[in-house]
Length: 272
Image (cartoon, rainbow, N blue to C red; front, side, top):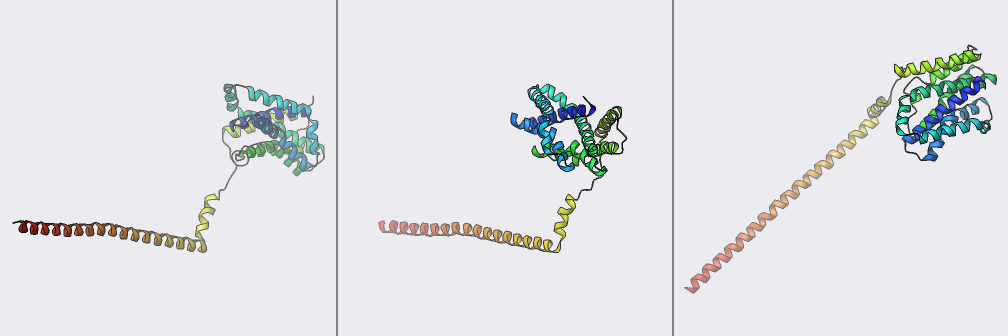
């Protein structure tokens, strides 16, 4: 087996297990585990084939890789939780293996077809991160490869080395494979980040700084204040009405008592 086939097997196992673990974390059933694992393992290659002009149906010719992925996912599904926890602690390492293997694989595909540098870089990047992006989207997660860590850069670096023919022999490709893994692990350990600029809070605040929006907000506030004033006024009136009613009842009872007392006095005088 050539180095190309070894890279394919390593990347398939690493990404298939990664997708299966994510599916089990999201409490998918066994069908969801296999679907998410297969998408993670082969989704990047399908996108790459579409972009560089390779037939998408070549996926069905990879019977050996499909069987390897199914076996890897089945083992991951049957492993005890303690073993899966150990895998979680080393998840970044296996992910780095899949990234390096698939990036080199995609770059080799593009160079063998005679594509220019730009196509080689795109093929390496999408083959390395495409399956992970599809996995995160199907699992309802934000693709961390685009916002959290330096991930796609290392795939593009592998494609650059292959496009510029810095790695052509088997030994050179193996060395590149190891270097990409080391760089990926260093970026995880030291938390390397690309520059970012967030406009989320800036845009949410600038909406209220527009004249129309500000006037509308003031009008809504005035309406709310007026409604509250009317509510308090009606509450005060209701309270006053509750107070006047007992007073009227007291006066009525006092008058009735006075009449009864006068009548009793008259009856007493009459009896005398």
